[in-house]
Image (cartoon, helix red, strand yellow):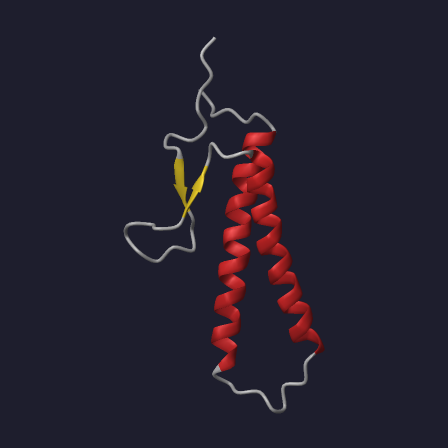
Length: 98
């Protein structure tokens, strides 16, 4: 029986990419544990940044910092979610519907 490849191409672009050529991609054939570790690293960094912000006093902060912080959180979280999706599909033996 032929197994359907859930990923038509080996390298899947990440959603946070804003360019046409998608220079940052996920290798869908990488070890699922490595993909999962990369995802956890990004989600953990995002969580730690949010925790730091939660504990900070913003009276001395600059309003220009807000878009910088939210952009960093978006990149970390979106990349982590994209990686988690690939790891989940690989680890659960996900197959594309026929």
